[in-house]
Length: 249
Ligand code: PEP
Image (cartoon, rainbow, N blue to C red):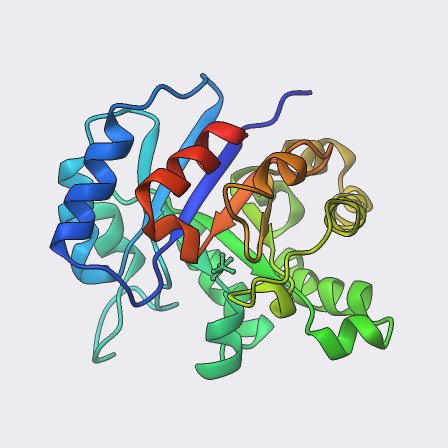
C-alpha cells in the first residue's frame, strides 16, 4: 500500500524571522507529489509567521512540544488548542532531547499524544535507543517500552493519525547516521510491533527516520521499504540541503 510520505523539519531552538522568510520562499516554489507532506516545526514564537508564509498546500506546520493540559496555570507552556487555533497540524512529542533534559517520561508522552489527538493535532511520536542500549542488545525493548504506554493510553486504532519517528539517540546531531540497513531493520521491527496490535493500522502509519539525515544519505535511507520519510534537525536549517531532502522521498 502507498503510505503518506513526510519530511519534517525540527528547527529546535534555532532560527529567526530571516530564516522563516528564506526557508518558506525556497519551499513554497517546490512541487511535491500528491501523497507527500512537508512539516516545518520552528520554535513556538515563529509558528504564526511560518503558518502565514505558507502558500504551498503540501506544507504544514508543527510544534516541537505541547503541554498535556488544555489550559490554565502552566506558565511557559503551550496548549494543543492554541496550536489548532493557529492552524498548526502536527506536534513533535517525546523527542529524545525532551526525554533527557525535560523529564518527558514515556507515560507523560502518552498523555501528550492523547491530548494532541483529542485536540485534532497529529503527533510525530519520537522513539529511539541510546548507544549503550544498542550495544547491550536492548534496542527492541527500549522501543517497545516507549511505544507500549502510548498504545495503552490511546488505543492502536488512533495510530491511524500518528506519525512515528525512529531517532536513534546516538545519531542525533552527531553526524553518525544509522546505516540504511540498520534503519530499515529497526523500522521493520517497529511496524511489526504495531502490527502485533493491528496489522491494518500498522500498514498505514508513516515511519520516519531521524538522526543526521543530510542531502547525501537521504536517498538511500528513504529508498527502504519501511522508511516513509525523515525528521530532520540540522539539515533543515539550510534551504538548499533541505529542498534536496524533501525531493528525495
Ligand atoms: C532531530 O533533532 O530530530 C534530529 C534528527 O537532528 P539531526 O538531524 O540534527 O541529527
